[in-house]
Length: 287
Ligand SMILES: [Zn+2]
Ligand SMILES: [Zn+2]
Image (tube, rainbow, N blue to C red):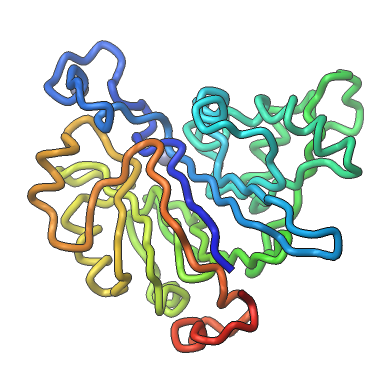
């Protein structure tokens, strides 16, 4: 089974251009230097008795979610997966409302998969949505679901990949032969085993200068080599990195992603043990 991964946003928390900044990247006319807050979309066809239907999962709903949904013609969301509770990853939740009404009419709220820590923050900020006492009639029809090690969403398995964001443990995701790891400053040794046999790796890389809670380009390149994915795309990019110039300096197989970039991903190997994922995707059982 194949899916399509689309970058809704590839910018760092402040976005690019950064407000008030007149640097070369913030004033660039290259559209790939304009970066909304970080998020990706995965779409695939689920084949059931009623025929095929498109399924759509979003990883993180940042403050640019509405604009991203408009740009990418998003008309439904079947689930949201959250990496962590920082503002640039959650503050678009309320814009799920109109899409959630559609899904709710089909029978259920949109599930939002989150860790206990992220759940607590979402419940606090969106009290009028999640509180049992909430009476606001137009609240989003969404339901928080505890994030498991493996999460099955309409036939696609999303494996939780723990990573560190400064002192904080946050969540990356593996799905089929792809993985999305954002806001990473360190990858625990045990998580590398979950990243074997990847075709496509998305890794955050803020800039060249070190930062306490984000990887530099150099660190991301080193992890990319160790993980050995066929292609690595960098995201969560600050205004220090111009698209064209940075790409000309990156090694083969590693490139900066940009908003709107779509890439095919193989989702065929879900359900297998991590160690088997790389070797077992030749068959047609899941295609
Ligand atoms: Zn972030
Ligand atoms: Zn700037």
